[in-house]
Image 1 (cartoon, rainbow, N blue to C red):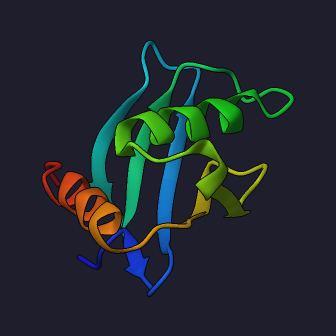
Image 2 (image 1 turned 90 degrees about the vertical axis):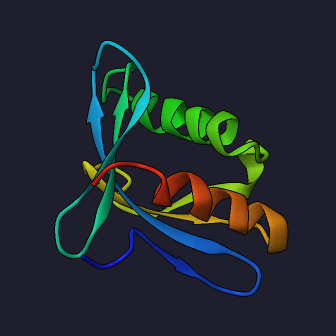
Length: 103
């Protein structure tokens, strides 16, 4: 299975699949080809609420500023590509968190 992310010098592209309206926010695991990180979000997919909650949740989970996370593809889709503007240690920490998830 391919990875759920692409690393660059100054950013990370993360491929995700969102399930809005869940009972809690959580990273579920990796699935599919190309691989995506499955994420459950409590907020409903109405008026961008789930997107806002996704960015807030990932910011807290990955310990990065919300302003560093941008949805670059899939604004109104369950499948999204995110750009996270980070380098070095922060990238390594996010990769570690993702790789520790069960498949």
